[in-house]
Image (cartoon, rainbow, N blue to C red; front, side, top):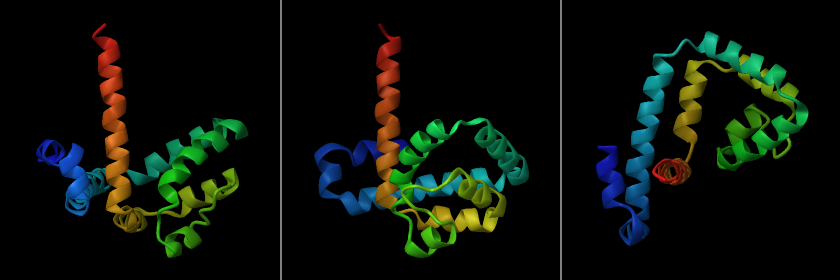
Length: 138
């Protein structure tokens, strides 16, 4: 299904039917992510994330967060306020966010990410995969 959407809504066609294409891709990916969350042991994942964060130096955290902020900046104001999402979130705030979130809140966050953002991230992922593939063929 997802591949069909990509084939039909890429290039000039995608540009003309942006809202339809973005909605279809965004909604499909969100469903897949919700299924992954539903079948995941959130406590275990949170523990791993906290461990990784503890081992990460401040510079690496700032660099990774800056990339993540490209997605986070598009969240609705109420979610940004709840999780204190700013351009310069601290590592300590990230710990608090990880500790406080549960599956219900994760579903709300997933639903609130604009389809356009999800589609953009997916397209970027596909570009990276094509780049990796072309590097392996040489």
